[in-house]
Each structure stands twice: as structure tokens, then as C-alpha cells.
Length: 484
Ligand code: FRU
Image 1 (cartoon, rainbow, N blue to C red):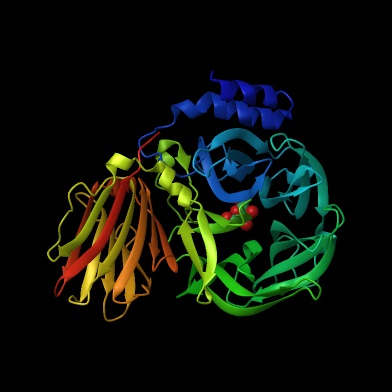
Image 2 (image 1 turned 120 degrees about the horizontal axis):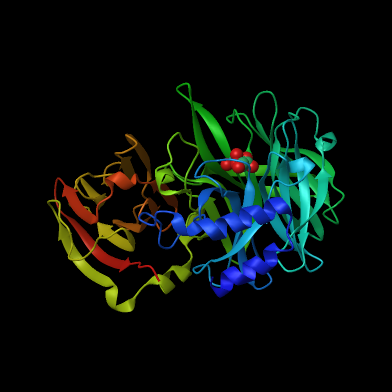
């Protein structure tokens, strides 16, 4: 047993039976999972299942990331909260299981929620779920490691008229002018809504009614968040849209103005938070240095989870710094990414001419960062194939005429597209690959596309090609990221 495990064992002694069992299960079994497709620099569950990031915050001098966790199987089950901390957003320490379904009010699970510091305590608010109820529960901690459940602080009687009794979850707490607020996801008979509550002590909450209704959302507006960045308010949540008779999940953001006195949100613009197929339940934290940092589940609700046969499912996006530029959100990987680079392994290339499909020196691998600035005024289009082996799982294609990028996920048989924001004849790209995931930042972060890759499909090559002419990679910066 190493020191970290010994420390967790000491903490476990103070926990409830169900919580202890979960903790001991993780410590005793995480060694048996198949490491082959474990990611190198993204947060994953130590074993079992992970979905939404929860309670992301900066507290007690560290970043905290909790998450929806089912330790016992690589599939969704009674929800616990797993807990990691980090001083640098790069190296994450397992802190054990923070919450388990061990009370009457959460016997079906501790669903998603959030965190805030108050009176020197780290306070969590989550949804306690039973067979027929969803209610909001307060939890407090003096050290940020062991948590005491205070109990239900917002029960169903506080739901405003029109909200469905059984659909009331995912509180995100924040503070404005000395008052606490939470946004919570819910639904009317017809569509998704975001509810607003306020409090001055986190215990006594008052309903402020429906803050936001989304007629396009036929489900609960899950995992809402409301934060302020660059002087604007941003509301985010997940929706399920009906597209050709099939539900399509997406995260949307709305930039606007939140008036806490009136309890209203006035929208100015709306867009998808991510344009790929594996991004859900985003949540932000405010870092000590003022950055707004976003994490999301780097999967989505789908039938097949590729890594389940290896004993684990789910990872979180690399932390993204969020800003507003030209009226839209810009997301870029936190600069701490650089800590993962090995100086003598990086490759920098200038003015590489691309015609027929080709590889470039040692630019390839399964876990890496690749930054590109490309000019393609002398071509009809420019493409990149990622994870190429015998198969070609992910193909990016920049179409000159349309000023758009399409990403084809061959394994999923789907194509995704968004504008590519050419600037002075150049396109800017930052790609993060990590074994079973790809995060593609387009136009200096104006759009992001996130994907899961089927491990059966991945190969180590990256190839570049131009269509109808020649493209020039004006600058390429490649950094492999190795296990440390
Ligand atoms: C979103 C979600 C939340 C819920 C949690 C349960 O992915 O459905 O609404 O709290 O997952 O694990």
C-alpha cells in the first residue's frame, strides 16, 4: 500500500458503511482493470463508471473535481461521487469516494451538483434521488475531504407551478452580491426549464420561479450552470432535441444578462458549447487567478461505451479556459497543458507544402497535442486524418468555399460541421488526442468538436492532404504526451 492509499484508509474509518465499502472496493480493485486504453492526461474514474463532472471548484488551495461515479461496474448504477484534487490542473490525486447513497433521501443515488466555500467550509449541493423524488441536499466539509450530509434543503414543495415533481435536479450554486443562488434543471409537461432559488445561508432557500424555458428542449434542462465571464452572464445546460424523430443531445450556451433582483435572464446570443458527439454536462469553476475553467463529461448518453470491456467508462475534457470574444464563447485548453510537454520531443515545422496525402516525420501517436496554422488559398480544401491505421476513424476536412470544417466520425457513421473562422487566409487549429478521445479547437477556440474513438479502430498515424491544389502548413507545433 502506498502513502496515498494509507491516508485514504485512515479517512475511510470515519465514513458510513456504504461509503466505506465503496472506498475499499476502489482501493482493492482498481489494480485489476485493463490499462491498455487508459488515457494519459484526462481525468478518468479509477475503476468503473464516470459521468458528469460535479462540484468543480478551487478550495483549500487546490482544484477539486467530483464526478458521478459507479465504482462497482463499468456501467451507470446507484450514483456515488468520486473525488480528485490537483494543485496544477495536470496531476490529479484520488481523494476517495466523497458521497454514497446512504440515506433515505438519496437511496437511489447522489445525482449531480456543485460546490461553494462558505464559512470556511466546502459545501456541496446535490440531488438526492429516491424511487419517486428528486430533492436538493446540502453537504458540508471542514477539510474538503470528509463530507457531512446536512440533509434536504429544497424539497418538492418549493417547486414552482408547472414544474414536474419527479424532474428536479443538478443544482449549480454561485454567489452574487453576498447572496447565494442556484440554478436547477427541471421540466414542464412540454419542455425543459431552468429554475432559480436564492438563500443567504445555503440552508433556507426561496424559489424565484422559472428563470429560463427552452421550447426546443423536450427533456429536463440538465446540469445548468450560470457564470459571469468578461462582464457578461452565460447560462449553459443540456438539451434533448427532436431531430427527424430521434432525440439528439447537445449542450447549449446563452450569453446575456442575469438580473438577480428581478430573477430574470435576458438572452443576447445562443450557440452549441461543443459541435462533436462526445460532450455533456459541462460545469465551470472560477480559478484563483480569475480564469473560468470548464470541464465536461467527454462522452454522451449513447448505447455503446467503447471502454466498458476494459473495466472503466468515462473521462472528462481537458480543462478549458472560457472567454467571450466577438460576441461568442471561446474555449481553449488551459495553458498548464504545456507542463505535459517534453522539450526535446516537440517538433516544430514551418511552411510545409501539402498536396497528396502524407505523413510528416514523427508527427503521430495516440496521446498528443498538435497546433496548426494553415493557408489554403491555392486549394479547394485541406484535410487531416487522425488515429489512422488500417482504418480511418476521424477525418477533418476544411472546405475553402464554405469556410467550414466537417469532421467525419467513420465509426459512428456521422458527419459534424461548423464554421472554421478563416483569418487573413489562415485557419487555426489545436488538436488534443488521448487514445480514445479527440478534442478539436477550431478558429482559436471559437468552435470545439469533441469525439470518442472506438479503440478497435485507432492507429498511430496522422496524415495531411489537400484537394484541388496545394495547402501550406505555415506553422506546426507537435508535442507527444507520455505517461509520467
Ligand atoms: C446528466 C444526468 C443528470 C443526473 C446525472 C445522473 O448526465 O442525467 O441530470 O444528475 O446524469 O447520473
